[in-house]
Image (cartoon, rainbow over all chains, first blue to last red; front, side, top):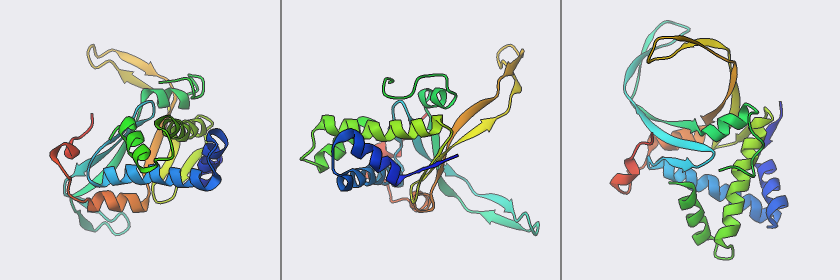
Length: 103
Length: 106
């Protein structure tokens, strides 16, 4: 299993869009940054054909240290959840042609 | 925020690019992540998070309406785990600028 990184994604943008390598990398960073900013203020990010990132509020609960069995309170917190779109789920299951023609 | 809002923001921030350019760039990014997952690869974006594919075993499900047992095939599901930095930012969470920012998606 290979791991795709920022560098790979930036390279794909570079080769498919005709921006400079630097600018491609910057654009990718800006995309991630704008998405992060929205999530930080509790806003969902909905990318059609891909999925939805949303922030969920979790209440306080009692957890347990699995090693010692000790009870530890888990404070209320906000967590990020990603719900894949049916299009993405289908691709992952090889049910559909690769992207480029969907949505 | 929707994909088109994201594209609009990026276009405003990059006056030398057309909306169409930005649209292609954004589509390229998400399509490439999708292709990687379709190949069974993982996509790791430090500080943001990692996309992986998880296998789910076949199981016997139930039609909730009729109670009837239905076989559910083995399948793969896309999974996202937020990176440390993003997770902390979300949890710290600046107050929303307005009420609509608080909406919770379906």
